[in-house]
Amino acid sequence: MEVKKKKILLVEDEAVLREALQEWLTDDGYNVEVAESGEEAIEKVKNEEFGVIVLDLRLPGIDGLRTFEEAKDVKPETQGVIITAYPSKETQEKAKEIGLLDYLPKPFQIEDLEKIISGALEEVEEKKPKEKHVWLELGAVSFRICTRNYECGHCAFAQDLQDRFGTIAVIGEDEVEKLKQLPGNKRLCRYTSVHFVKKDEAKV
Image (cartoon, rainbow, N blue to C red; front, side, top):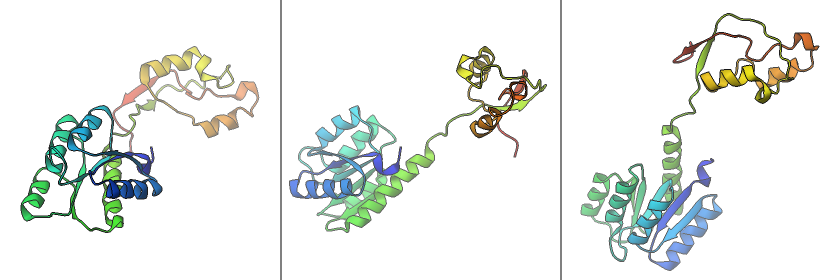
């Protein structure tokens, strides 16, 4: 999923600012959902995934700092930014202590908020575990000939390898297209071997 398509939760009780921020961020390519109170925000966090939560410090009911703490209790990976017209050293230190990404006093440049959001979402993407592949070392190469025109989903041999070893691709799709142009007796099986050895990682 593209970074800008990830959902942002904007928690702001002031309607004019809430709508303006939502419109600006949406126009910039973000998927923005809104909440008017901390309690509403927490309920949304319980049921949906958000890349970043942008919270006003002063909210009806529980404030933005407490809202963020409770959101992290629900989803520990939650990232957040506080915006406030009432900055203070005490709340700024508290924001840092509980792990908020930033603390923006109002008025602020909307570009500054966008940079924080973009940076946070990119960091989340980098930390995500990459798709796991089973690296395989070719063993006794058999030069097996493909008899299924590379329709591997209909080949018992290919299915058996995939079931036992996971994601494998000894010969890639581009090469397969080239092999399809060859006479039948030269169309090498894309797996090319009846014996594979599992490896933890590829040799560099």
